[in-house]
Amino acid sequence: MLKKRIIPCLDIKDGRTVKGVNFIDIRDAGDPVGLARRYVEQRADELVFLDITATVEKRKTLVELVRRIAEEINIPFTVGGGIDTIDDVAALLNAGADKVSINSSAFRNPQLITKVSKQFGSQCVVVAIDTRMVNNEWFVLIDGGRTPTGVRTKDWALTAERHGAGEILLTSMNADGTKSGFSIGITSEVSNSVSIPVIASGGAGMMDHFRDVFMKTSCSAALAASIFHYGEIEIPELKKYLASKGINVRI
Amino acid sequence: MIAVLKYNAGNIQSVQNALARLGYESIVTDDPDEIISAEKFIIPGVGEARSAMRYLRGKSLDRVITGLKQPVLGICLGLQLMCTYSDEGDTKCLGIFDSVVKKFPPFDKVPHMGWNNFSALKGDLFRGVSPDEDVYFVHSYYAELTDYTSAICDYVLPFSAAMHRDNFYAVQFHPEKSADTGIKILLNFLEL
Image (cartoon, rainbow over all chains, first blue to last red; front, side):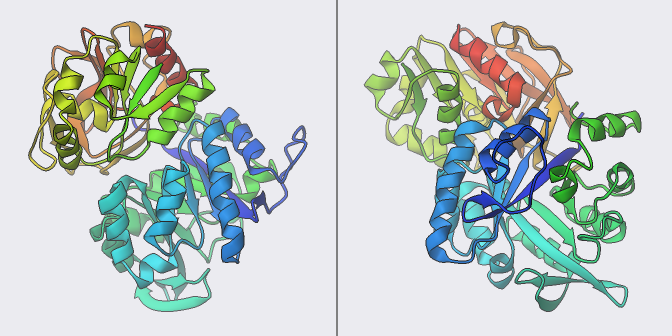
């Protein structure tokens, strides 16, 4: 039976993790490689590294970091943030990333999705979609949520799939940071519309939230950041809980 | 020395990294002499069947590979290339396993992506591995079951998660990305 995936997300700036992480016995909480290794031990199913470095110069650090992560860890990982060109993608995949996550540049230029999937296979193209509900309708936002597009979320997800996306990472901006649960409605709508896997993101605060998103939608995975980093939810405990509720997870 | 096939497919670096973590040196090569003289040979890969086979035939590596006597391990696309034929790009493959590679029917999410378990484990590759352990899959095409099937995975339908014939081994999942279970399977191959 295919398992529902639990995916911690690490924010990276200038090659270091940004948000504090309180694994007690980790000496350097800013070292992405050490944290990644810890999540592997906790049986996280995949990892996502989101680079929020602004400058081009410092982005080279990211490729070097990806190389170090790939040397160390033996589960799949995705790298995202500021990927604009096929050259950016090639550099990250060649350094050992399994997948890249593309957001605004994919929206502005869906041909980028096609190019990447033709050259490297659609399995490595994750299209990240930030979505917000306005007047009961869900729309796509780009540029880190700053720019509304007026395009309906489901429509863009279908377009991304048609262009060759292998997976959708769907973040609800209404839910993100609230710890009040995933946005079930839009996650359900998108995951029922596309035939590729959907990762639910934004809003995780309690173990029940993971149960809900897996039971009430057909999403394939759930992603969270701070609740894992701050140890509010431990992954082994979460998986045991989900298994006790009849959800198939890798224990 | 372990030889890893150099060709137009992704994921080769991950396989080399995994070998290095286990303390095995490897070279990435498409040189027939290096491949023939290697202790073991691995065909890794995430990619597309037609262009991969065109590359292999262009370098006459198809005949080199089918004639190898040392242990050979195909991973993911590697397994599919070792079958008779793939629907992906209507491609004649190496014909080591008498199995046809087909696209998953659209009854569930495709690609089959994530951790899944397997059953009917046979042979040295799975020494110390139990059927309730999970390994990481990512593929849209699958190899049909044959007499050479040495592990079965069930997603939409039962398919070959692994195959074995003489010195030829193949796995549809990615042992290099399958945490501890993957390490066991890789080590079993390396210690053959």
